[in-house]
Length: 125
Image 1 (cartoon, rainbow, N blue to C red):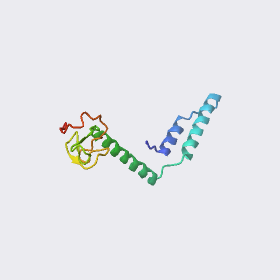
Image 2: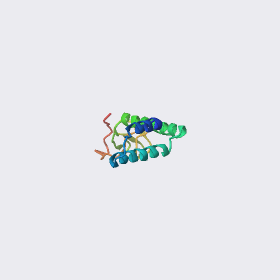
Image 3: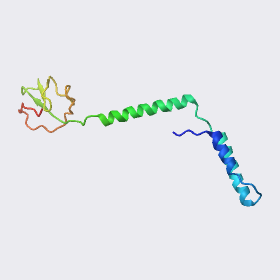
Image 4: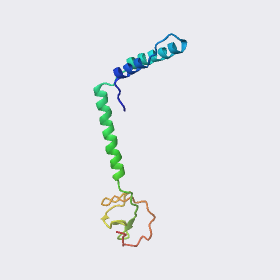
């Protein structure tokens, strides 16, 4: 957002006005007068709204930085350690848990990778 000084802008418009009474000069002055009225009647941004905007801008900047700093998603699969579904090992970090879920509770790997070998107890970590 770029803020302007409306009073200064109106003064600059006044400097552009031409002296004379030709149709061309009157057209220029009419256009300048319309611009002056438009600037004078444009609603102003009050301080509260401006601070709200700046607060939102700061939040967007923080979120943008967080997204840029995010780690890429790792993909793994669960390995059935005992062969009976009672204990599962993450193929990425090797941590075990009692149930297979969509994500590893330790390394947060997404468990959507094709399983290589159900009996393979080694992991990639």
